[in-house]
Length: 315
Image (cartoon, rainbow, N blue to C red; front, side):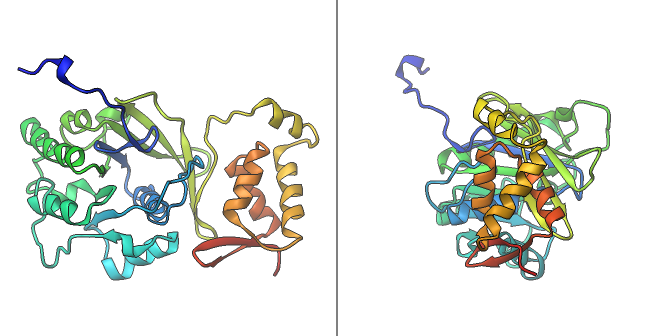
């Protein structure tokens, strides 16, 4: 027996508050093709380069990541996608499954890789590909043991573990019950993020936090994936404006007019980093969605230089 008086209290530590906690398991789920892997690759790029999360919160320093994916080719798909998002690939590792075949969720080789590489984030994509049989997640006892292994590794080696999974086909029920497998999988995850397509614009995906056992649920966030502009984070669905932003908006009929005027003002002086543009317009109360839409209307072009994206009005 251990008395709780003998336990030293400690706060929850977050990789990305309140969505992904360090030392815990997060489940990212959605239908096939909804952009789960693309979203995660963007986050990996920010983590490995010491960038910022979609809400603008900066990372203190670049961190290592293990990204284990069995559905796509390493050389022709995964690495090009990581490079496209701007990831530092020298900080992203994977267990070579051509050499290490039969990898499963509770495989000691995953633990060994974590010990050797010391990542801050471990991503398994998708969890269904790392099961010894299709029934592993369906049987409550088996699913619980699998998740216990992963949870212990996350806590012991001080990393966040994100499991990417597909939803089952039981539409019309609560999101927590649409995960593939036993409810024990969801129970073991401290945070569950679910991606859905926007009903009015199929290019836009909305991320809901449908479970958070460690704090308040995070706001809805969204991103778009288009042929012209690729992956882009957009605004929070539940936008809020402070008094200063509302005063600024009065000078224009709409936020779009304001975005148009400011973008022209900035870019007529020369090209500007997209990150700085989002920060400046965000301070004026303009959402990322409005910025992206205005960029398209104005015909602003993007190009990449030294791992940063720049916007230009030049043809």
